[in-house]
Image 1 (cartoon, rainbow, N blue to C red):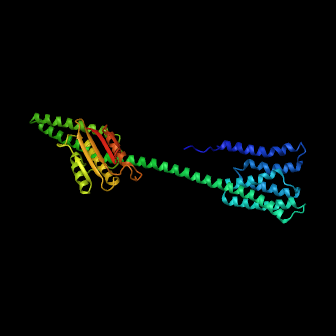
Image 2: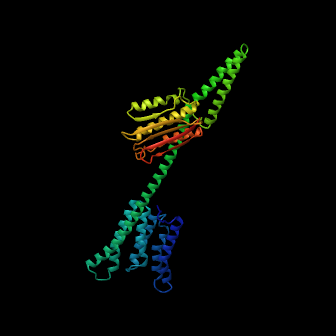
Image 3: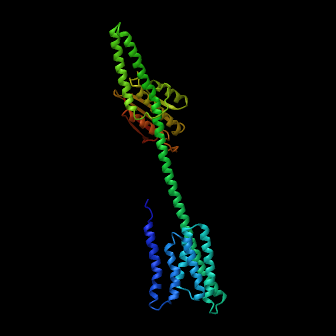
Length: 381
């Protein structure tokens, strides 16, 4: 959307300078040409020059302009060029000051709409209707100036509130995303605690056994050392993957699920009245505890999203395929998940992507061409 053109701070300053110069030029040029007396020229300059500061000191400018207009009453009974400054001062007060000062400027303008015609028409025999027409004309100019200034002030306040709200929402969104990422890393770190702890405990047990068996049966010690080496390599691999995520002071100690628990997820989903067709590999392919845990969490989150967003009567399909060097996980549904109203957080897919990225996998998630939603993940093992 194209943004409306607006003057910057520098442009506003130049606009005020040009305005004052435009209004003061006829006065300054008129003195040598005999158009104005010096006293009246100085009075008109006193009415015009305060407009230079109409944005920064609108109330003081309005007071100065009003006093200069009052000084005109005893000096002349004719309208002067400098009186064009009055509606500009009223507009500036309503625009750049508060509503209370704007109303005060409006009231002063109405008083001026009475005093001006009385002063100008006093030498002449003017009927009441003629005086009224003068008053109504000047009062209309005063009210229009005040109304335009008030509209400008309220619009500026409205736009400012929208900008402030947008900036606040942006900051809150960034904070929520940061907190979500921190929570996800902390959760993964707690889950991996058991994986790493299990590997180290196996190493310790096998090392103790090898030390005691070495004196009696060296062959047993050799097998134990081989187990230690294999377990250590697996644990180091998991530690390298998770080293950047282990930042939480807490650590869970409950056993974590894996590939063998996918059948439990399927049974749980069907028990909750979900129409789910599941195709799981049998026998289960060998996979590290970290890969098994990630596969379990991906399926768990995908089924949870189907329950939350697919709507009643949706049918889901789960396929876990062993591709040899990787696991292919596909979870599809024919519900209305792509068009449903989100809770605004969108953290489930973020968690999936972070888990899969740790193991070097890929994730594709989005609406299906025929309706519904699809999650497809490839997880190296």
